[in-house]
Length: 164
Image (cartoon, rainbow, N blue to C red; front, side):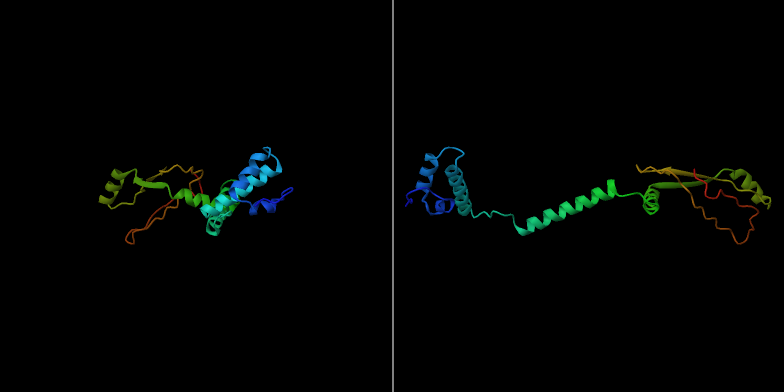
């Protein structure tokens, strides 16, 4: 039963649904009675649905984890200062998309020299192509020459630390 006199927010919990509706109808939209009655109706609806006023702890944890991961990704991609170590890592990642092709440019001359058992200069053409979307600013090819133990090379020259 409704108490006589003015109501306080805690008194709305004791009202029946019909009394709560009557108080809300009697009140002016935006008045304290209207607001308190609306809040009490929402509380009762949540109790009927058994809905918590707070999200589940696992939901809070996963949301926090997602925010942390996205913040770290944003930092590493856009904000972090560039250092030599970071540039080296970027260059290593760029090398993963490169194709190296080596070809002999003077095969006829080499074949004649081999038949005549003469020394010869074997010329290579090394083609480096970027097969991916990663920009490769500076490519320093590292070419290893394995010498045949039966033959002694006369001259092997490669540009040292010269970028393409």
